[in-house]
Image (cartoon, rainbow, N blue to C red; front, side, top):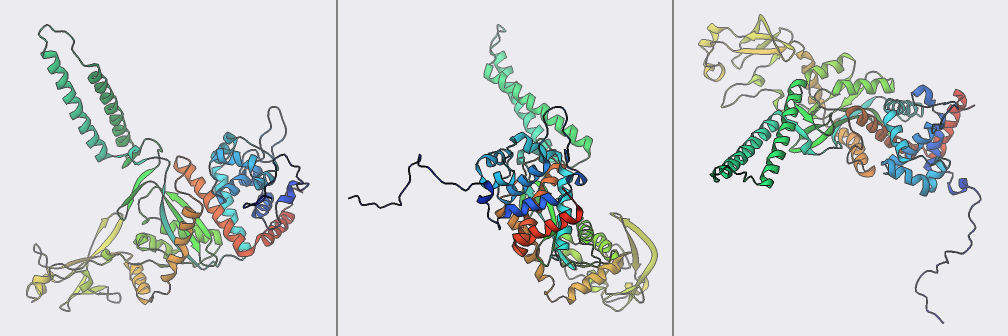
Length: 495
């Protein structure tokens, strides 16, 4: 009698009784049914997908873009982003077999679909935000904006700046010069004039000359473009730096609604900071939710006068912490601008001695902004006991400048001063969670595509899948499938 210590196994050639249809393998609450229902209600032709509603003609018929879109949504939700891995899934994964109805496209067809439908994928992402609004999943009153660096399909050595190219050329010139000297010394050592050149040394010399020619071509390309960087692998990727860390990639921007933490606006830019992204992201969020008077939350990196003014002009109320250099503080015991309060009623500044600085009628431009000039009375300042702590060493009066739209900043400072942390305390919990989810849960450590337009399309696909999963967590698969079927009947798609 045998003493069995393991679970009983079955012979591989034993007859099995499987479910009669593939549909029996997929439960009613399986998320793939939501993917199938959602793509089934989309008008892919109107969204701009290639080969949508294709008619049979000569040659091999194309794959239905609906099948490929379903495949990508499933893949990005399950950390399967590679076209080769997606092709493999169509042969091994029962859920994918059900979703694609046993269609098995090759990896090139799968990759080409993503590459050739970038704008359509962005449009699907925007349409899904409207669906979230119809499902009452958006608050539509407050959003948080943030950005993160996403790695490109390129390494750091492939991106060059003007300074790095100059250093590289100088280093190569020294190496080439030393090799020339070595070759000259070898020639001089033979009075009969025989060729004593070391073949290895000659090969190294030729390689160095070739490397120098490539770097010189990159330098000329950089100068002609007017950019600050040039990339050999991904032409649009940039070396981005923040908080002591650097990455070759792009700056991903999102705006997150505060109700269900759904991403309502997204963009991918090349800027190494967020100072120019506040108004574009808030405007996109407002249009996506069809909501005016949004309240926006952002970190200090978004603090910019022009951007805050643009948001205020659109009726938006912004909460952005002031950076340390927002107010110029005095040094070495001297008075800074914070010691000169502004009075809007009299349009004047008051100095620490109680004297007024009034507009002198002159203005100047700096970085595209117009500033008004305020000056004190030179005769009064000359006899002031505080003059040594106030007046510049080369002037007899104090000058203060004020941006022509500085009232926007005054209102913003007052708003931030009145916030006890309740509003700004929400920012991190709203917008940092989605980025963490995209990077950890989705496994998005770098883009698979190259070029800003292609990576922007891929980023929209990532965001679409994030939102899709959030919606299913909020309302469930059954309710979402019912919504898709109802909308499909109203639109008459596929009928």
